[in-house]
Length: 402
Ligand code: AMP
Ligand code: MG
Image (tube, rainbow, N blue to C red; front, side):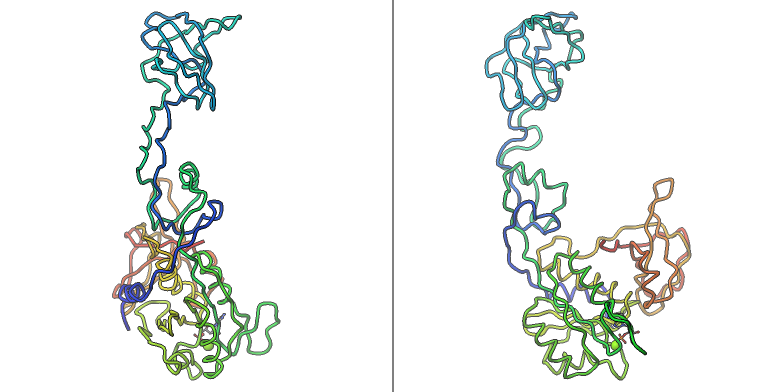
């Protein structure tokens, strides 16, 4: 049995980056950026008006109201490219270039234009620089604005778009094959017969694998027999970067996943992790394919997938942060740990009225209780060897991908 941290290190050591592909900007959200993004222009590219109003010289406004002669108009997309002199003003719109000679913009609400549109009365003074965003004050041409390895989110799209990244280089999507094992399983559109249950793990795993950026192939349900498992595993491994199985890895008489992997000649890196839930997790390599043999219980599947397989999937795509991000929260209720294993226990994260992040452990019936787990938004990491953590203690948590 190895500690979780060592298991994750092993996963990262065995995981190789996949290639890079270009996608259209509109398809890049939730992919992993595979290139540094460089500004191809200053931002703003010219001195830009921040208000609708008049470009002025601040020094002309020491006595207000002050009358200025309107000599032109600068609109967004169509500037007034002459030198503005003392005693003059240029009508200007938000986003338009500020003419040479002007050093401030007075907002239109503090002005009054004459009926013949020849003059404007500026009602209040402005400080030099007011309502002007100077060229390159935000970003200078050539600066790196986003870095390879970041998760592309919607907030980054304007940056990519503005610097001309119509195509974005991202990590190739890993191909994941997902295979539920267990002779008790029927597909979700079937009515379970005597001693049968519907398979849920294939769907849980497919959902999390997609959230981790993978393309997913769901394989037919596999029964508990070594020969059948070997055949399906070998076929699936041949066409996937990662194979994730569920079930058949504990100590039961019909737990054949490991046997099948071993008979196929897979290299097994670990087969027991000091983790609750999820002790019998297997990690192996078959040819070029990484294999995660996860336990059958639905909550164990969700926990072990996100700790191990998700980390590999993100590392394959070049993610800087491959593992789940840890956040510290205040424990809202007493929580029992385990003496020999580190626990990842389902919880809800919320903030109280003071803004403190609280982790509320879920009331659940163990690793088969997927209905209780449906309410979880996070997992609380309880170190091994701790019998009880009291309410009010600080705990480490990770958010479940959603
Ligand atoms: P196992 O690890 O194969 O011993 O399975 C542990 C428990 O998880 C058993 O109660 C199984 O019936 C259940 N289980 C295994 N596979 C699935 C699945 N694909 N969907 C739902 N439950 C499962
Ligand atoms: Mg089973």
